[in-house]
Length: 262
Length: 194
Image (cartoon, rainbow over all chains, first blue to last red; front, side, top):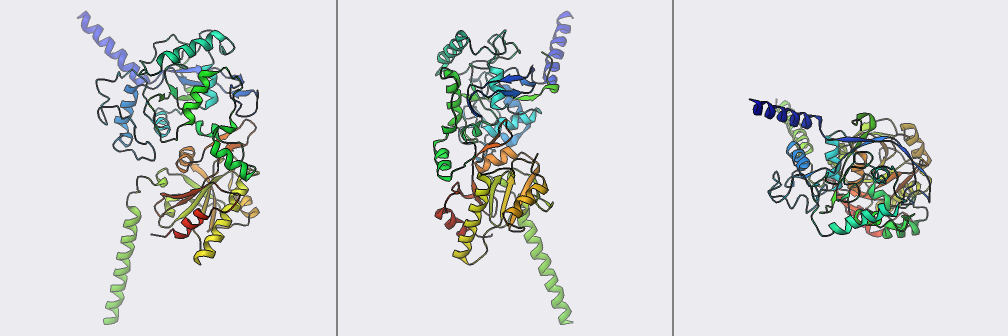
């Protein structure tokens, strides 16, 4: 009887969790200087308080999404929205298969697909600034970027996982906001990633086309020691919105008033 | 009697033709049609429309914002030159143009009407449109256009002038706004209505 009650309670707890949906954490806004001089060197960028998913979207989360939105099955989605390689390591269109831990971050998803997933939970992809702002925190500080130990730890984690399949989400200790895996597990899509590589306003036609060809010409790094960030930006720069990569996943954000209190 | 019969036949035939046309319009869009990303648009005269409603003939599409000082006016002038070159070459009117704003917060119908009159472009050949519903960023991405609002309020963006075929598939593109792109002119000249 007792075991039965416990079973019921667990079931209820699990259902309750599923009904409540993904865990979003409040990120208190502030003024922020990006490591990228997208809008001029050392220009403070105002960040409005928002809520962010505590972990990257998992294979299990994405499988549930594809089941509910069959237009995003790998055998149905138009190439225009998700090119070759989309969910390619899954066993079938609706089965991720025994070789893939459902708690792993989903990768092999395009920018279009990531946006559709977020829209499905009344959220959206973060902007680059939102992502970078949240990722600057450690366990006790909202901006740990000036601490060489912080940088070294991230770099070490990145090097350790090079060539490895990403592990399950949420295994690291949470940061100040309750976020996991911000800097180390996978690269993550951001909503405005493609526009980071566009020059401000193609003033001179010749130069405009040159910049377009060069892609990243408009982008400069404020902090040349920010290797993990450079690697992340380089990984995104190579992608078109319908492209997929085994190293690129995503998480979503919402307006702050929709998020759960930390 | 014969005359009435003929009239009836004609009426029936035209009804049938109408049905066939309606049937063609209702067929599913091709997988690669940018019309799949449905945007509810409103043009500089305040008329609501969708790009899908323009299905059946080729279209030149680009993206702009009205307060843009440099790149967008150049885009408009480049499209004018392209259309003039196409018309000189084919002797027919060039495909119509839709310029979609990625700044609907500021680009009111009035702002778009001012931009149209500043460039001396008019409907129906030129429609400057503000999106009122739908995923503008996804639509832009299908055209290869990216944009970011900078903290000072203007936009970082790139330029794509895109030729869509009768079903909204990308038939050709150019980013050349400083000089005429002869390859693009040739492709627009070859574009046919269905």
